[in-house]
Length: 406
Image (cartoon, rainbow, N blue to C red; front, side, top):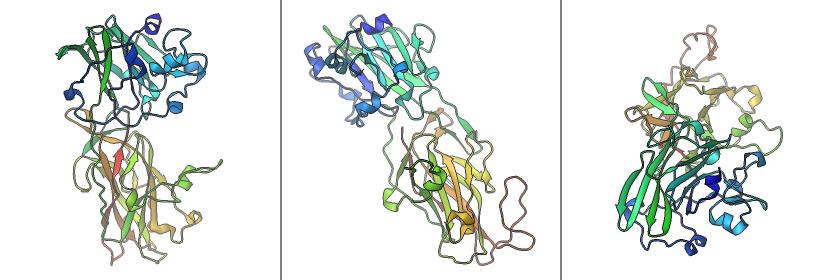
């Protein structure tokens, strides 16, 4: 750890798994000679996302703190290297820090809380793999620390004008679920391209944005049965509140689409019959699935419900929400609700997360109870054929756009 404390470089922070951008410090300009112009090919006009608030980045439990900088460093010098200061010590925050030393070393400190969901620290690898000297030189529950020569671990060397540039990439592996019509993941996928740039006596660290996808326009697709699929957004603010119940107390309006979600964040789905007052009819769901485009039959697809029941080949099973007489709804049989953990599709050829939008679709039908069939869908036994209401056809309804956000 001593080598980590004695770095002499410029530091760059990457606050999320999705974006990273070059960052220079005004305080550092006195100590280092910065190049007059940076290479345009590295940035292409991309704008960095807003930095995380300092109080969020610095909310590290005492037992998890890893010292940053020399012992006894003061507040100004600690902030100059983008670390956190609690009045007594300087420590790394909940982000990814890239440092370059004058003696030709990369120093990288990765926090598991730098992504949502948390980054799996043991899944991180460099271009040269994970074997020494490319593996972590130190780990805690919350941080992984890497230090290696700029000429090692698959680093690429190039000239950019008068600058000698060393470039490497850090990535993380992730678990992929395969279905008959598509593949998805709910793990954070991390990719960080970083450089050490040397010019004379100056040292510069750059982190380059990779794999960003511009947000697509919002889309909605109504169904001909006068059945609506909508997403709920209620939240619990009081102690003892049941999140599942409170979630369906309010819904996203058309103006609020596209909705953004992080991986594994709950997506609360409701399907309901519109403009019907017959208390005897029952809404049933057949298949519910997700696509990456608003067209229900497009590929790839991922099943959420099959015959109204959770798709069993999904590690994170869709949760059915019971809607009964105690729900407060006038016609509870006109409603179906379920909860999906947010995911993103994966390209089966390259095994790369597509990091884009998803749409939820459901095939629906209206059932009229008979003496032989109550129209109640059960996932614990084989369901008998339900009598279909003669004046209604089955229909497919779709959600508005949901965007994956790191």
